[in-house]
Amino acid sequence: MGQDVFDIGQDDETTETASDVTIPSENITIRDEMGLVNAVIAKHKQFLETYKSEFVDIDSHVSKLRESSSEEKRERDEINASVAELKEKRQLLYHQIKQSRIEMFDLININRDVRKNEQEMAQLQKEIEALDWRLQTTVMGIQKEREIVEKIKKLTAQIEEVDDVKLSDETGEQIKQLSARIKEMTEEADRCHNELVGIADKSQEHHGSFVEYAEQLKGTRGRYIWLQSRIKSHESAVGYWEGKQGEIQAEIAAGDGDND
Image (cartoon, rainbow, N blue to C red):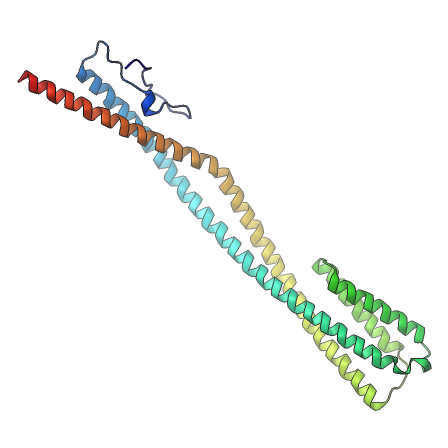
């Protein structure tokens, strides 16, 4: 057969495949050859037993990591979906608040010509409009958004303090209703904000766990794939040598028949 003798004493990433291994045929009997083949098969099976045992443990660990990773991702994605809904609701409230505030300012400004603090009122309204625009068009963090909302509340309160003109009963009632509506919608927006703060933290926690499990899976992947490769290689070798074993058994049986 003219190839190197298979070393059955060790195994590593460069272990010979079945087609690279032969049994020397010079100066040995067919029964000696059978003994060597049996030894080769036994050694491959020993490696298989060792590697399969380790693979079962790693496979179980990997399965648990994947399950935990998927669960954390599911929780994170569900929370993120709720976050998106709350943000959309809050933005709608901000828009409605802005529109109601514009309507209220228009009513307040009806008698601007007789107002003593006209310039101050105009400046306050201008600041609120700028903050409203920023709130609806700029991507910002939850904390920064809260700061802007609180500033708008304070500026609105200042307008109510500065307004020194007594309007008609009808106009005054309209302003009062708009002010109450703005307050109600602002409180609802605050509730959305507070809920966002709470669940956003939970989303980050789940994301952190998801990343941690992903890193553990990444660290296990090399050994996992290597074991799969070794098991496949040794199973192939066992199949090859068991085939040779069958051929030798047939030769022995034929030889015994000739002797008869």
